[in-house]
Length: 384
Image (cartoon, rainbow, N blue to C red):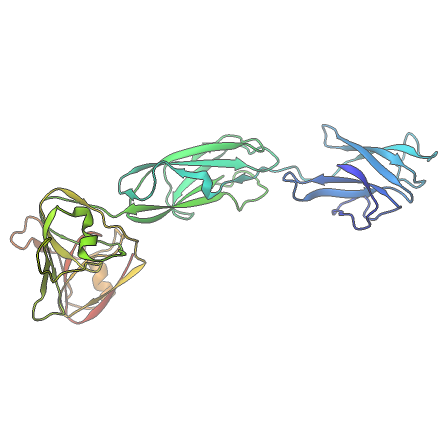
């Protein structure tokens, strides 16, 4: 843009051909950044009297032609000028070759641009299409690149493969999508990264990532029979009726061993029974439940960061409040630092107790209950 100014503090940029007001008024040339929020270039142009910019044009090579009127005897002219002497108010034409960096692309995405085909929370195994709209808010086209979806804050495991992002013009946008299979119960940060391998140069490299939270419910498919089980999540209401509400009508009794009550270790609950001494369940406990019909157990809760389980000398009936999939009996023994630790797990064919001693290689899993023997009182910290 061009015009005239009488301001001695008119904004001027580095590389300007004239950095000071010369007369009562000077012509100026200013170039705005693509977003209109900054100066790419700005300069005075004039002599010791009044000078006015009137129009501006740009040729194919990027040179700027500025036309206007001057009343200054010392208006800057170059060797070989068509007319180098002021003869009253005169017109002028000035050609400038500016060292302005070319406009760049700027890919951007925000959480509102990331849409899930189904509303959270999800049952494990659900197929959810993730749709993302990526915008080019820069002043130049964005060349071919790709977008990547990840399960977690980057860098994290990929969801599907990189999705092509064909060239996006300035001000344009492009949609990409993948299908995510909801797994690993708990809270997930689902993220999309534009230009995931940093292929193109951008004005701003900090707005290429957007994330949204998705929750996958812990779920167990239960069949008729005796089940030694637990749940890993932290529930808001740990009354037994609330915890087992998703299997209401599918069971007839629940039992848990309390190592602190030497007079009556076994506590039980039966729906509709007048007296029950097992009234609460939490994610530290393993328990036996008698299932009477096929049903799906989905306690609603949050994934724990860590859980502290206080263990008594002797046998303890515990759960595994973690979503880890590689934690073994050997890891438990190592963490406790005690000799003589024994772990027993469910074995459906081992009548009448339906238990087996778990070897050191046995992987402990969310949803399973365990009998654990400790030779002394101990504290087990389980990380989620």
